[in-house]
Image (cartoon, rainbow, N blue to C red):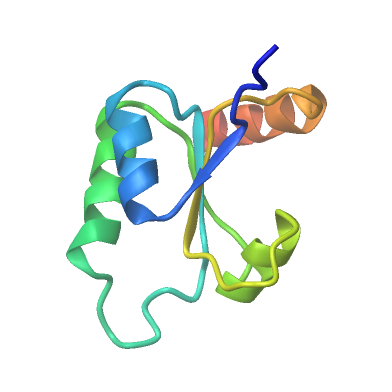
Length: 100
């Protein structure tokens, strides 16, 4: 059986996933505008998430976000497609997002 992808990384992949209604939640690094301006691709993801009612969290630094998903690289944005193996934390985050 083919395992389903649980997460997608990167600006293009996350934007594509939101448009295809596959991404259920977005986590963005909180140190993205260290150069003074959020670039258009990030803004596009923020706008897409809002228009599609996809919860959006700004957590971790880029390095911390990479470590959180087991990569040793800096990651700006992660889209969660499936909460398999983490349903309880996913439900809690959705509840928090609903109150925001």
